[in-house]
Amino acid sequence: MCRHIARIGPPQALGKVLTAPPHGLLRQSWAPRRQRHGTVNADGFGVGWHADGDPIPARYRRTGPIWGDPTFADLARVVRSGSLLAAVRDATEPGADGEAACAPFADGPWLFSHNGAVTGWPGSLAPLARSLPVTDLLRLAARCDAALLWALVLRKLRDGDPAGQALADTVQEVAAAAPGSRLNLLLTDGATITATAWGDSLWSLSDTEGTVVVASEPYDDDPRWREVPDRTLLVASRTDVLLSPLKEPSP
Image 1 (cartoon, rainbow, N blue to C red):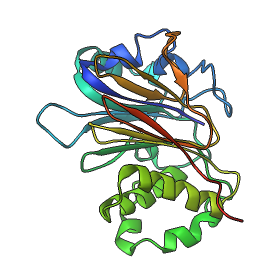
Image 2: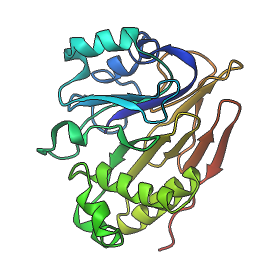
Image 3: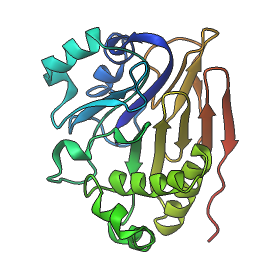
């Protein structure tokens, strides 16, 4: 279900990360190498990026496959940024939400994506949904599991939780309510990347020039790519990539 990627580092064209690599997100949309569930990610795509001097990221999202959008190819060729989050989507269920259901979801400086699926959706998460303020539910961008996961994470961020705690607590709450869910979450504010590996593949790459990439799978065969173990929280800045184990929820 889906492929996603986030990068922070020196500014470069979006296409250098998304379309130019031999196994970049463009190719992963029809020929992923490490996807454990699903085979083609053609139910929409999106990219978000931060511009210098503006804390609010821009987004470009569409409902069709990424390979069929010539406008995106032009955009990726010329837009430069020091941070991005992008995803190609394999929808869990058919829906009518259009591009609103395509990651990245956004609020303030944050960009968010979910790779996976919630078991028993939507009923399994009804108790967690009821824990949210009504205003949060009314503001849901779409009626898919990823949109509700984002609302749960965002509520924690607004309450002052650090990004790592917000993701870790959300994963454990959802895993307890819906056992067997796949919950690879990805979050960036332009300065840091936070992610979880819970049920699907996750990799990271960092270099001495202050670049960090976190992705569902490597976009090339660079030996510096490192696989993130399952049940792990990743918190990365331009200088450090920290991994912490995530506990299974108590029965």
